[in-house]
Length: 133
Image (cartoon, rainbow, N blue to C red; front, side, top):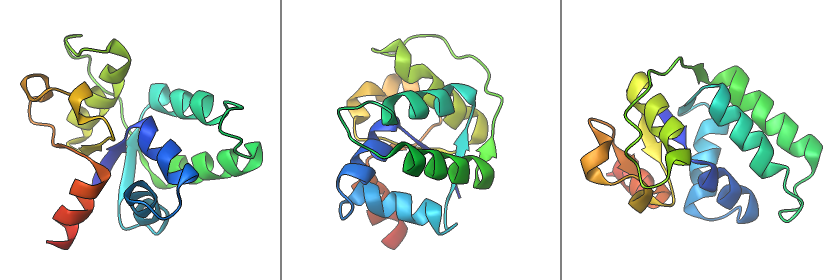
């Protein structure tokens, strides 16, 4: 199964290793789900996870992103109309649409239903509940 992880899911997973975002990341690390991504998403992951306020070890971030990139699915996404409340969220929706992947985010309000098209957008907890149900 292909998924797109919003950056907030990765940050939350690394900050709180026992919550739903961490469980989603564990599924990716175990190969049960695969990450769809493009260069824009990887660049954002690198930039955000390198912020000193989080205190993540640079080598750990590099290892994590190298694994996700090597095990994931690179996507060349087609542009969508920039109609989201925050244009910075658009690449995540574009990659999910192109890959026919589920978009997992801690901020579903950033992806209003009227702009999602066929993309399924779930919180980490909703995604885990759907998998177990």
